[in-house]
Image 1 (cartoon, rainbow, N blue to C red):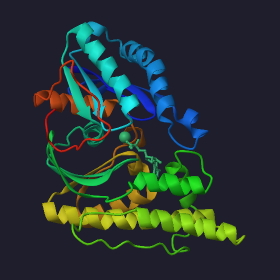
Image 2 (image 1 turned 180 degrees about the vertical axis):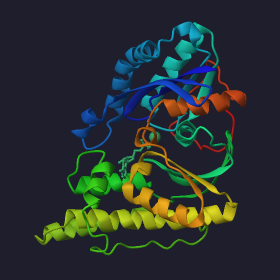
Image 3 (image 1 turned 90 degrees about the vertical axis):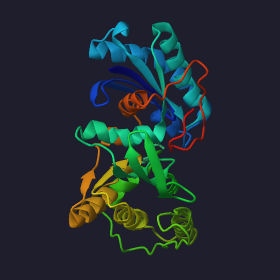
Amino acid sequence: MLILAIESSCDETAVALVRDGREVLTDCISSQIALHRIYGGVVPEIASRKHMEAIYALADEALLKANISRSDIDAIAVTYAPGLIGALLVGVNFAKAVALALDKPLIPVHHIRGHIAANYIAYPDLKPPFLCLVVSGGHTMLVDVKDYTHMEILGGTRDDAAGECFDKVARVLDMPYPGGAALDKAAQNGNENAYIMPHTKLSGNPLDMSFSGLKTAAVNLIHNKRQKGEEINVPDLCASFSKAVSEMLIPRTMQALDQTGYRTLAVAGGVAANSRIRGDLMKECGKRGVRLCLPPLSLCGDNAAMIGSQGYYEYLAGNLADQSLNAYATKTMEGERL
Ligand code: KG4
Ligand code: ZN
């Protein structure tokens, strides 16, 4: 089954062609990051307009690159939630128009389910059930992937997402948006024990996390040093901060593995590109003999291939939409139907 997949939830317009959920024929991405960089973050209205400008040509490009004609497409999958509402609406409306014109099924895909499905592309033999650590710009959670379309959130951040914190601290350090990758690079030459970072204690669900205290502590430290005219060792600060983020994520992930008894851990979302987190996960999973699925960097960030993959499984489960499909800025990724 050949799916045309569309993703426009944030600052990347993407169109992919995916066969049977696993084989990516083409994955075209038009990134707006350079445009938003001058504002230090995504400007929603600019994002919507740029999606509108890019999407038609990108879909044509995807067909051309894969040498596929419109009549070969069996279904259209689209990210309908969560994300910037104006950005999502562009993709959803485009997908609805294509589905109507080709008279093919329309498959709504939750963005986070898509991120998880990036693992099915990277690891063709991977099948649920497994545990997934989702660490994206807007989400940080541990998900019990019971089946392709049946998932349960076991725990997650109670405040900021890990990616948001990386970006905020990087911004205060004058790194270009989105700063997570630059902070990661700087951290590689730093001493992780140079700065003391707080470790937030949480009551209640032991798999819950918190990053806002850590973010505020790092930002305050930078401001205080600047006010006093003291020098900040940027690599040391980045390394200490990355270590603290990892120390929030990794023990909870290991606890979730113990709790569920799963022997496979998948990782999803842009922050999965972080070298410290990747290294720590490899070490801990290695010790426990747990299979670790870490998609390549190209599949960690936003892309449409992952939407095409999850779209296939949503189709098999009968989760289809009609022309009344809407977009939603927020929506849980757990099993409910539209
Ligand atoms: O999954 P994604 O594309 O966004 C959402 O769906 O929300 O992830 C983007 C996030 C940004 O916060 C970006 O700074 C972060 O992933 N990121 C990183 C790294 N590469 C990207 N964070 C830490 N280290 C990295 N190497
Ligand atoms: Zn994303």
